[in-house]
Length: 216
Length: 169
Image (tube, rainbow over all chains, first blue to last red; front, top):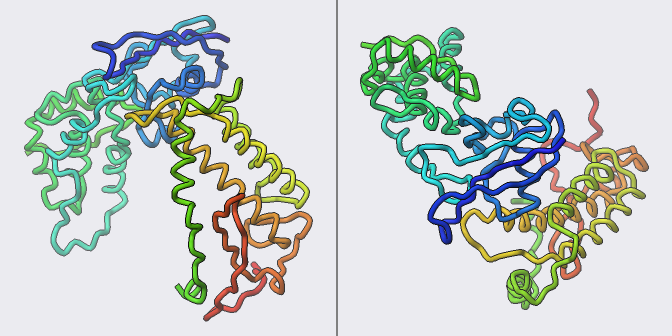
């Protein structure tokens, strides 16, 4: 089967804005968007895009695919296009493009610092976690920091989406000295948090479900 | 530390740094013809296939010998490639070129060491030498870079508390 890939190109040294470049590629039913992007790259090795693991664990290949932000390695071409169809790839919206599909991730990682993104251990805690607590942590701990939630949805509160996920993960950790108090920084109501929970479930490539957390 | 303490490292050839620099700079020059119809992608793909098919866990001397020849041919092709530009941010084609060069070196090291070791041990299984051979091969393999490719030597194993022996489960 054939496919026209329309890919955003941007060379900061030469372009003032993004321009779209077309690549004609062959593809097969089981292939992902990343697979066909590799084929475009072999036609034109100057094309820049981040990737590493090819298996939905590193979060590097987040980009705007057709109509929304997705992981290229986890999106099947056949789910978005047919034989002779077209697929459009752009850099993640809300991020500054650096070159082609590569965006500046520094503000994204900086935004995490707002929530003190590590466990502040309760003094004297033995470190053991009960299985039911562990299960609550597990959802948000699956986050791979790909940036897709920041690109696609609003948190409705004071911190950005990925930082909010990290904050919830720490707020439900029994080893953490701040615990539920961490939720104060978000400025969210129970209703706002519930809205975010639903938006996240729809967009997150890891399918993260946020656990219930007490808002004080 | 004990393994290496008894052994002094050979001094690098005096001109090797200058030669390495020259090789590096040549790769960016316009003087080298790009090999028509060849690409770093094709070479890397063939390297992947070759290493999986002939240098996997189960090996034979004949296949390893073939692999060594094919690796040398891939290296010749690699040498004829021209990198299409200088270092700049997000030059993934340059990264691919550099990685493939290192993978070719590693391929030669793995195939060469496997060909030399005429016994089976752990994840190195020679179908033509299925038994472990402590008499000849209770040895380390040392590999250093020579002018014409990797140079292999052996070193004694320092045995302390646990005596070596065939594993039984």
